[in-house]
Image (cartoon, rainbow, N blue to C red; front, top):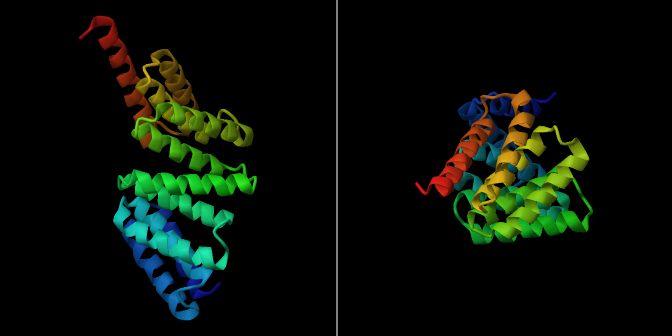
Length: 232
């Protein structure tokens, strides 16, 4: 194993362990090495940029992540093509960052382009489900709730067909759908979806951020029902 490969694996190990500053140092070094060796227009460098970008997303440093994703997209477009699954995957990551930064218009364009590529390639994968879920979340935020519901349901169908209804991914998307039902005032459906999502997610750990969000969401749902019933 080369020193380069060892550094790359070390960077990913640090990232997985939550040692983000150390991961950043190592991944920057790997990118610098590849840039010097292969140049800044090769896919190996684009992959380095994507890894570093995803670390910055973990760190919520979205302003740092976005230009790196943009650079990786340009390289991928030239080397692999803008209709490739790799391009679609990176485009989805870029869209998610734009969403976090509040740039909803550009995020929607990227999500839609990514979905178009997956559909054209007939790639009905978890990655495709993630794009559907991402766009649905954006539509929820921008009060396009009926469109959001269709996308969440489509995402659920993909996850169900690939991993089943007891998978973490299914519970995650179902939780997002529950939030949407609450926003739509469909409190009974929201309650049912929250409870199902909690039951699915519980075996995977109750100390996760996602599980905490579900607990909070079901509380909000009960509060909204109480307000309607009591008028207070």
